[in-house]
Image (cartoon, rainbow, N blue to C red):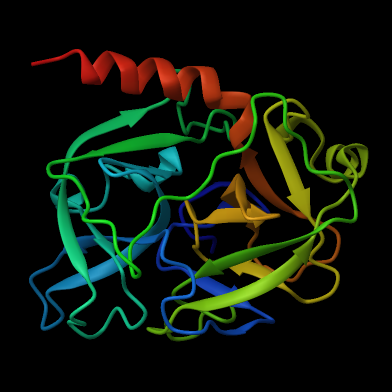
Length: 262
């Protein structure tokens, strides 16, 4: 059984809780741009982490569109947690901010379609920038990530399919693959203009479901963790990210439009 599944061997990575495999615990607060998207629950744990995200402006977090899964109770009561290392603790560095608006790409449907998997979260209040909370640099408009470049992915959660979620921020280095090789593996599900991918053959990457977390290359957010095979480490299927540079015009248009509202 796949998590949040639309295809027989494919799953959105953010269906349950996030995870990094083949990596290690990040140095506390070494990635101050990271965001944990959390949803309230009625269990003994008041909130649970459902997706990652990246702070791109004091009042905006960038994440994956499928993180707004309407089948999850209370999903629109989502909070963004910034400045966290241990998401199971109330660290003094943490800032909890409610989401004012969910701004998904209008062409994303989530119905047997994995393209346009990008969403802006407009925050109700601006984040206070300090050494624990910082804005991430975005790529240039026509920026691309060359094959074989080493990049980083980080997140909270599962280190393997079906394992318990990890509460400390994990990180892993991944190697970018040739676009044509990505296309050959994923075929019609891979858009060479809107996506990039990293190899899972070395047993490293994101697992169920570090969706929305950034792919960081040369200190810039180049991608958003989007989807992977259910087994996570399946060497046949690379791990796929939404390419941020392809959506910069849309992002700027949306934020400009929101800024003009009263």
